Amino acid sequence: MAKSDVKLLGVWASPYVNRVQIALNVKSVDYEFVEERFLPKSELLLSFNPVHKKVPVFFYGDKTICESLVIAQYIDEEWTNGPSILPSDPCDRAVARFWAAYLDEKLFPAVRELLLAQEEEAKAVLIEKIVEGLALLEAAFVECSKGKAYFGGDSIGYLDIAFGSLLGWLKVVEIMADVKLLNEAKIPGLAEWAVRFSLNDVVKDVLPEPEKLIEYFKIFQARVEAAAKS
Amino acid sequence: MAKSDVKLLGVWASPYVNRVQIALNVKSVDYEFVEERFLPKSELLLSFNPVHKKVPVFFYGDKTICESLVIAQYIDEEWTNGPSILPSDPCDRAVARFWAAYLDEKLFPAVRELLLAQEEEAKAVLIEKIVEGLALLEAAFVECSKGKAYFGGDSIGYLDIAFGSLLGWLKVVEIMADVKLLNEAKIPGLAEWAVRFSLNDVVKDVLPEPEKLIEYFKIFQARVEAAAKS
Image (cartoon, rainbow over all chains, first blue to last red; front, side):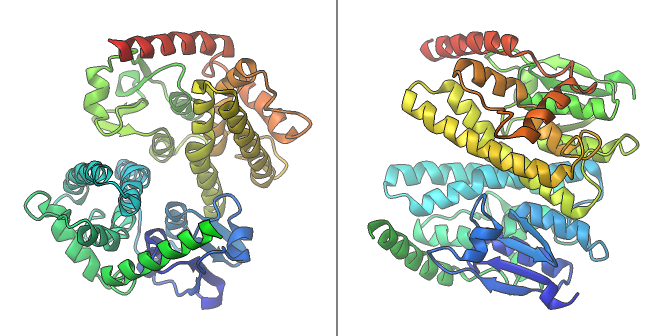
C-alpha cells in the first residue's frame, strides 16, 4: 500500500483517532498522519467532514470516510488480507457492535463530562456511572474473550480497539479525580486486559502517555476558554 | 425457518422495532412478534436487555441481540441467502453506516424532542434542525442511490430501513406541528423516495399510520405522566 494513498486527519490525543491508528496497525497498512490543529478547525476538516466537523477523517485514494467505528469496519472490509478486526461469527459480531455502540453512547461521554465537570457532586455521579459501565464491560469481556487474551480472542479485535483507545484517558481520570477505575479486585479481567492491550505491538506507539494527555487537556481547556471569550 | 425460532420483542409504534420487522421481511424470515407492554417494563425486556432496557430485542434460537442497527446487520449476516441489506462495496457500506449513525445521533432524537417540546421557541429550533438534517439526507440520497429508486440502489437496503422507519413519525410531526417536512420542492429525491418506500411490499404492513401513532402518543404521554405522579 503506497503511503500517500492512505491518509488520516486526526489529533494524537483523540481516542477516536487512536482507534483508526490501531486498526491500520492491525492490518499493517502504512499511512500518512495529518495533525489537525487546535481551533479554528482546518479547511480540510470542515470540507471533508461538514456534518460533524470532527476527527478522525480517513482518506483512501479518492474516498473519504468519517466516524471512528465506521472507519474501523471499513478498514477491516477493504484490507481483507490482514488479520480480521470483526469476529467471523455473525452473533459475535453483533455482540461486539452492541458494546462498541454502548461505549460511544455512554462510557466515552461520561469520561468526557467528568473531565469537564466542576462540581464535586456531578463528578461523584459520573464516577459512579463509569464504575457501573466498567462492571458491565467486565462481564462483556468474560463473554467475548471466552478465556482468551482479548475481547477478539487470541488477537486484538473490534471491541478491543473501540474500548482500548480510551485507556489513556481513563488513567487521566484516575489521576485527576484521584480514583481507581481499573480496579484489579473488582474487574480483574479488564485490569489484566488493559495492561496486555497497552503493551501490544499494534498499540504501544499509538496510545498516549497519561502525563502527555494531562498537559494536552490543560492547553486545550485554556484555548477553548480563550476562544469563548474572544 | 421455523417461526418459533425467531422472536421479536417490540412495540408496534417504535421506529426502531419497525427497522427489524422490515429487515426480516427483506430476508423473508418468518417470526413471532411479542408486544412489549406499556409501563412497567416486562420481565422479559429487563432480563434480556438489562443495559438499555429498550425494545427491540431479537431472539434467534438461544441467541439474543439488542439495538436496532446491530440487529439489522446481524440479520443480513445470518440470513445470507436473501437479498443483501448492506451494500456489497466496502466504501458504500461505510457511507450507509455513517448516515445510519447520523440518524440515531441527530435526526431521531430531534424528532422525539420535538414531540415532547412544550415551548414554541424550542419547537422552532428543533424544526430547523430537522429541516437541515433532511437537506443533508437529500444529498446523501443522491450520492447513495446513484439515480436508482432507493438508498440501497434497486432495492431496499440498510439506509432505507434505518431512515424509512421514521416516516410515520415524521408525518406525525407534520400534523402536530403543522409544518411540511418532506417538501417536494426542497427535497424532491427524498419526497419521492418516501412514497416509494412506504408502498413497498416489505414495508407497507409494518409502517404504522400517522393517525394511529398520534393516538398511541397521547396514551403514552398520559401513562408516563400518571406513572411520574404515582
